[in-house]
Amino acid sequence: MAHADAKALEPLLPVLRQLRDIKGLKEVKPGIFYCRGAAFLHFHDEQGKLTADLKKPGGSGFDRYAVDTPPAQRKLVDDAKRRAGRGDDD
Image (cartoon, rainbow, N blue to C red):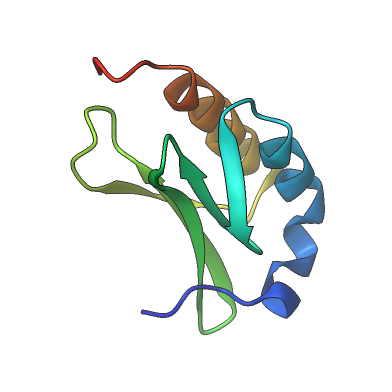
């Protein structure tokens, strides 16, 4: 499954701005974020429906998030902040 391109991400610009402000995250391509040198968060466009994959606590795999509503978007940003703030001991 391919990552969402910049055009597909346009509806999420406010969310992307919030993610870009999280200390420790680096956006290597539009919508693709790394944390401490490892893949951390990215978006997929599945037939027009956007989803996000956020690294699980402990670093094994990703949790899938719907990002089609403001509450879902807030949850993604809140969880990303929390997980990015963890040290390497998570």
